[in-house]
Length: 106
Image 1 (cartoon, rainbow, N blue to C red):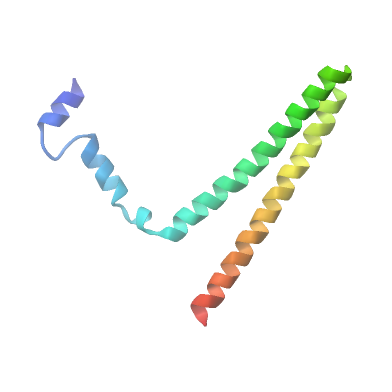
Image 2 (tube, rainbow, N blue to C red):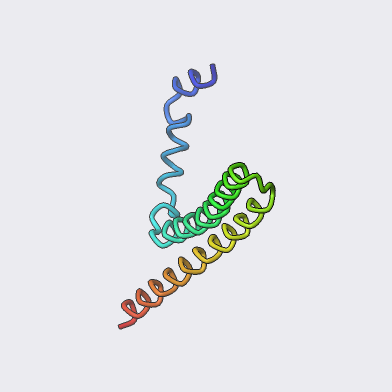
């Protein structure tokens, strides 16, 4: 019902709010979105490493009947792999940022 009322009044409603939001200065700043993307990638690296470790450990425990030891072992491997991937991504982003800053200055 409220959607219908908002649609009848020009200049109000979800479309106007969305347009104002998308035209805000934050969407024009590419560096902000690059940082958001980099943070997302780093979070996904950590979560995916842990989930893969859990899956492999669980599957091996079921197959070999060694519950819960392989699950715990591969969980630790997954955590270590996730943090290693985060470290490598952070290093890569830092190197890219350093070369970008040198290009801007020189």
